[in-house]
Image (tube, rainbow, N blue to C red; front, side, top):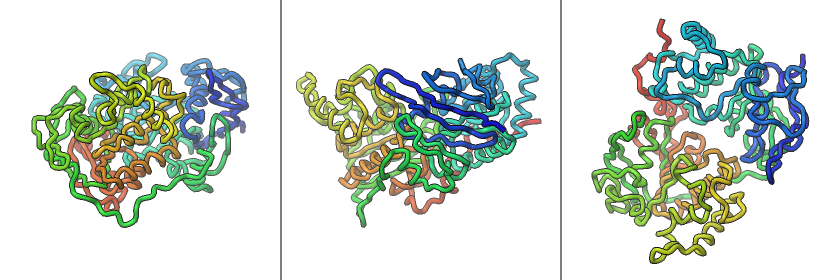
Length: 510
């Protein structure tokens, strides 16, 4: 039986970057095949060529033993290649059925399409009401829409890009059950993920890229997560080093009955949130995306200003009525989830982006004039200390890859040595080596006396990094407890909660 997909000598070059350098590997029928690599390794470019979004400069793609050219995604789907992207393409105001209909290549009568959707959902246990509005669904439920849409085409190869980055542990297990059933029926799966323990649990084979080149094809079950990570980065992986016998200091950040109003039709405000972070402590906040994390960060950073000065205090001083600039002067720095346009301005240089947040703390503006020398010097230090791949402080933020922009943004805030740091998704989209460096920088900042709040969907990150943990669901925060007191199962249940619906609402009505 021929390979389902075979790549031979695939090469793709962009100005100044060799994204894929003679990459060759194959995927067998019914195989779950992992594609691994750090940021910039060439995974996304390779997948885009398989799915027809771009074309290789050299090399050959063979499909079921026959050479093919995939000119566009529609042609890929016609061949039998489906893809579920990391970022969903869904309209929140429309129903599940309407969203799936919009994504189909051919127009199918609504009643017939609904019948086929229900059949796929029943077959694979993807229980969901086709008439539910997307805005009422959890992220895990939204992902089911994308999977169902792909499965309606009866794919022979399904590409999954970071499919578990926003799922609870229970939802991950449900997804794995679906993927194993698909593989057992002969569908091949190309699985991209940074979560190496998942690769070990799920995948039959792993192809590892580094710097655009293939460095190894291995059996992940015979590897450790560490060995695969070290192949990805080409060097030893750093462990997080926490000081032995650390003693936490007095309360530094105290949040008391914090509430926010609804700023948009689909926003989840925070409701009666209270917690305390001591000097030297890292508090983790877990949760499925869309449960009030953005409102919490905006309220803490000052983008949302409350009506109670004492709802947020730093070292006993109320900052609840202050704006972002005033809070930064009081020692609070923040990193929002969205890098582009929120944490950084793409058309600005890195030096100018440094001025935007560090101008007062580091004296980059004197009597209304920007001290460009100070901004460039500081930005150069961020680039060096956090291994940001950029040509220098004059590089625009928009010219950086997502992972490198994340390293710059994290470094820009950490090196200001804030008294309080609030950060959302600190290692979103960065590779194992960069994530380890960011984690260590956060630990070192806490060891110097800062109070840190880490909002993340990555439970492995929170459990390794944090001292205490709380879970946010529908804008409410659970009690914070030592991380060691939580089991994965308990965290998952708290993350899942009742998500905008009543019990049993996920079942498909007759």
